[in-house]
Image (cartoon, rainbow, N blue to C red):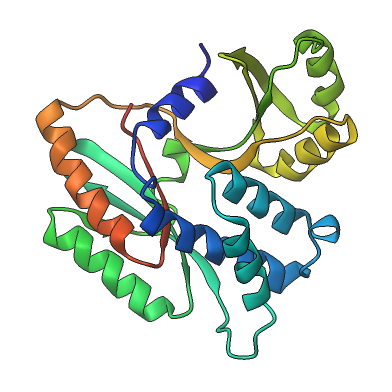
Length: 236
């Protein structure tokens, strides 16, 4: 089993799953994508991907349409994408990706949560070498699919790895190949079910169940913040 599937399985067991938290976060991504590239998914690849990922999480159609409409509202505040790096007890390192209309507020909130729970904010760029930023794209494995043939077709688009398990195919590439891989798969008539940019740790660490429970409590506090979109850690 490759890194992508190990990452996927671990991610499915972790946070960011509660609907009350998840849908507003997905909505922000859709609104920003529509605001920056237009409200027509056919002409806006980023919006198309945002909608795809929202549907994969069972976000209702009405919520998706409302998020797109918000992009054209006059009172919609300008949103920024920002990320922070930090460390927590037990050797845990983390990237925190946020979307905010007030960066000062977001910085203060994230820093406050970290410092109050035995962690600290790190200088931007401190953890870049500790994580690989990858494009991960998922789609169903069909009976007539030949993975070796697909691999050859996708190499020029930046494919690094293709693997299948439990009826799911995961294509992995460098983050710079995200658009090219998406386009190549769409041109081949393959129905993508999920596409994301993820940060995968180069040297994952193992911690005890007790330590994991402590870390999860801190991560839950971070994810309760409305500006926090995703958190990536170096935990195996």
